[in-house]
Amino acid sequence: MRVIVNHIEYELPSQSMISDALTLINAKPPFAVAVNLNFVPKTQYEQFSLNENDRIEVIAPVTGG
Amino acid sequence: MTAPLPNHLNSADALVLYGESFPSRLLLGTSRYPSPQILENAVETAHPAMITVSLRRQGTSTAEAHSGFWDLLKKMAVPVLPNTAGCHSPQEVITTAQMAREVFESDWIKLELIGDDYTLQPDTLRLVQTAETLIKEGFKVLPYCTEDLILCQRLVDVGCQAIMPWAAPIGTGQGPLNPYAMKLLRDRI
Image 1 (cartoon, each protein chain N blue to C red):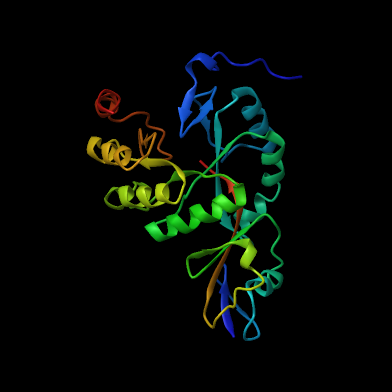
Image 2 (tube, rainbow over the protein chains, first blue to last red; image 1 turned 30 degrees about the vertical axis):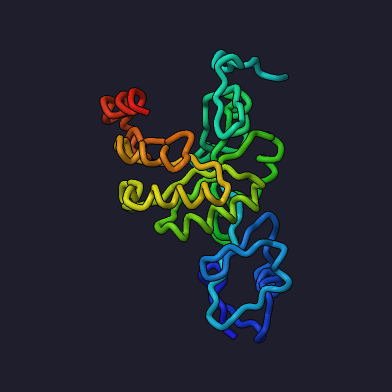
């Protein structure tokens, strides 16, 4: 199935979890995740099933004002 | 060698927000320093109450360029104030705040809800409702806002214990453009 991670399209097997998407992009801690603009706590990465066309955001700390 | 404490640190006149006491009244940004070392030196010298931080998508050039920032934050051990920079809707703000809370393990949030991309002027029409939602979710909200008295009053009414009115549009370096309004805020709030 097609998912979009940080604005880039990827193919994942159906019934993939968030943890699979994180592995796919080699996400490095610390980070936080949202799916379709909804925050997903890290405790749910292994259980949260992705759907076709889901938009996943993986964000990391940067400097800011 | 540790730098001497600056004169602005006065425990008798501490800044108290949301039940937390800060010996300094200085909030320091962390962006656009020439190097991480200079940022670290600035923080060590200034002893700020908090330093502002942000979040960006992993894999972007911005995030990659800041890959050492997390280690520096841990080393400096100064309370952080995450912002919601770049958010254009209340939903984006709330989601970003929730993500920031998990990453930084902090309930503090500098609420930024952008209404205009050029000036980065806050979306004043949706700011109060967004602040109220965040406060109900347990966040300690510091809203970036304009100097409008009624807006600021409403932000205080929904529970914001401090407001962050702009002096001039971000990045313009013009200094306070409306000192009368700023003084009025101090008089009325």
